[in-house]
Length: 122
Image 1 (cartoon, rainbow, N blue to C red):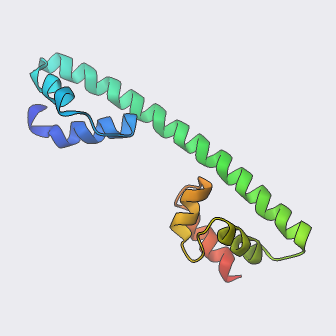
Image 2 (cartoon, helix red, strand yellow; image 1 turned 180 degrees about the horizontal axis):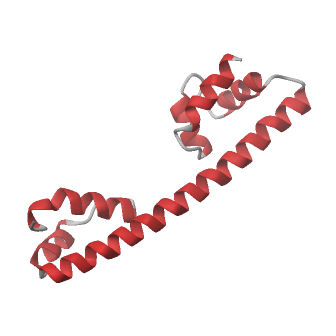
């Protein structure tokens, strides 16, 4: 397998590691590297990607904890249901009816959308 023929894979891995795609100059220098150099760089990108994924999970967990505490506090303070608290919060976030956008605005993992949908139906 040659790395030169897998530019899309390298570009994807770089994006996972750094959040954006590599420049054309970076790709050119990668292609010009020896296979050993390419393998070493790919290992570094994989480690960075794994580290970034772990940081993202931690950020999402903190956001979920903050969000769920805030929603719970709203239910107690205003004597409303979880569904109403979420609706109010969605309205405050300008995300009425847009669960994916709401998750984005609140820093929640998109997988939380299923739980939010379920809570809204209760």
